[in-house]
Image (tube, rainbow, N blue to C red):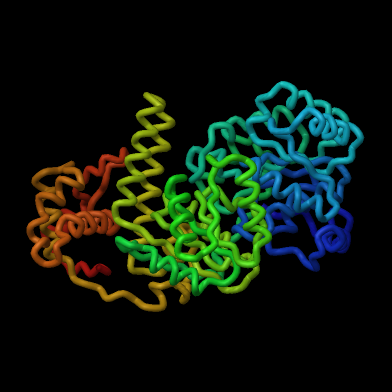
Length: 507
């Protein structure tokens, strides 16, 4: 769909002047202006812009140009407060409403709203379930002060997104609460299925759909197996990094353990996760924002909307759970446009651990068919991420599903193409066993075949598990989506058994 005509709202120079006045920028970044113009023209919009593309400006500038209020739905209180502080430092009237406000601050906020002295009000999605918040929206809408609603991290709404949140799912009520008010949904990544889900659930009306490539020309991806003792490799990566460093670990316990280990090794590392008390989290965030070269160890939720442009390294200590999520997390590097590194250290067992967690979540949900469907998709996304990590091709090409892009020339695979080994005889052994015992699970298969490779490298079981996973990625096998890792032959696998071909894989 086409964007509103250039200059439809105040002429082409008016928006650029507002951009310069309020934010000090001389020009819009790609994808921003069409979204801003659509919102000012009263049109709904779905904007999928890569991390670092300036999504926040797409709803912040319309609030300032219109002189009304834009309501922003955002997933984390820490993220909201961080954005509000940045806006306030620029002299922009912004606030966030959450249950942590004391009575005096809440009354001051409501007074500023009544006097039309706020331009941006940030809310967590849970606040829309509170009757007083709904009444507030009614008043703002009836007075004509509400000029737009923005849903940040909008992929959280979709059951097919990589970070689904039930409270986001209820945001379909916004259209009924705010009829006639333009809605803009924003995300760094959203596959076509997710985009369709967002349009339907938010009841967007003939929205402008603005999608920019997630490709980042300044990021260099590298993925390799995590050694038994990864600390030397982590320290080496830190020595080579510029600016700020983000290290992601899956669990809170792991975050704290790695922060301690790095500190003991002479690195001033700070931990951050949701289980810390608010004061400690605030201190960690301030350290990350103000220290010249901070090293922050965190769970993956940290970083959404945090404005630190000079992150020179994003290091994952576990296999990410999805390619979409990893693009968003790694995209927090190099927002200043300078070269930055994105490193994943993983173990093959990471996927098994994640798959079990997904299965446990389904058991906890009981017989909810939607939860089962989401779990199956999560297993598919996990397998795809594993294929990116273990594949032999360009990392960026593998991550950017749905985009036709040439090899990046920057990732570890492009810079040093791995040697390919013919695994045809071993593949035939795997396929033949599954022809006899269809539905055998990965662990049992590896145990039965382990003896044939154990003498060669002492890792027979692990090698057979690796090969079976690669055969799934090569479309010779199919794997169950319930996390049980049961395997079946696919038609291509049967053809291979009848007439084998050379199957060369990066070991």
